[in-house]
Image (tube, rainbow, N blue to C red):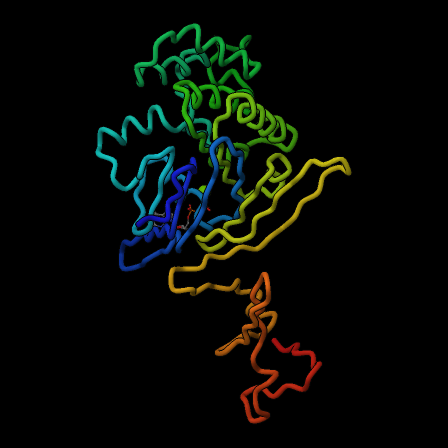
Length: 307
Ligand SMILES: Nc1ncnc2c1ncn2[C@@H]1O[C@H](COP(=O)(O)OP(=O)(O)O)[C@@H](O)[C@H]1O
Ligand SMILES: [Mg+2]
């Protein structure tokens, strides 16, 4: 009945989000598919405007998709009641945003910010737990400082502590290093990696910064509101290497969409040739075997190098 995977911490299928207003429609998400397993740390990388914040808005329970399905930690995000949604936002997911103003209350100290999140959710042992969290993030000595008395990197560590205050199952971060320099970004990402490894919190980081992929095992690229290439990094004996794979989605009728670059590179159009091999299907231009009277005559081996 549903394609949402039960064991996935995050599962999105055919997610569509259309913003409409003043006669103009923007398709921010155009059938996005994503699965993140429990305990995984994944980066989603894409250019500005590719739909990253829209996706996180939906996963964080702030926004609803126009179509498609999304589930996080076993909750179907489309069928939550108002009360469940509030509970979801307080206890099930934690967020870290790019702008520290959005993460921290400026008139509360680091510790008070962490404790405030617990107060809102009714989490007990607030003082002890806030100390513990600030220590884990190596900012225990800064507990009594206001955000304005902390560096950008320290503020993001406090933001991470706040996001973890109520023991969420999933951590969502939107450009968490967007306002930090390279060295501090790398540090904050390593902190997030440590949190993921030690606390087992499923973590999704969205960013436009390709360097983030160096800190995670799996990177998913997002383009025009759809996920496409995935890059896996492995830390083997021979050092580190990455493998890029292009993915697309096949629907129930067997239709699939090829990436635009592939289509233009091979000048695929109208009809393509399919060959079923033992383990894969080959797709190639049909033109080569068309009659010479076809629209674009081609000699075998001819370089089709026209724009
Ligand atoms: N509230 C909104 N109303 C109309 N269009 C929006 C709104 N939010 C985002 N968009 C548009 O949706 C697209 C995706 O935006 P966004 O998800 O913010 O991308 P990203 O975070 O990857 O930069 C962009 O074209 C953006 O202009
Ligand atoms: Mg954004």
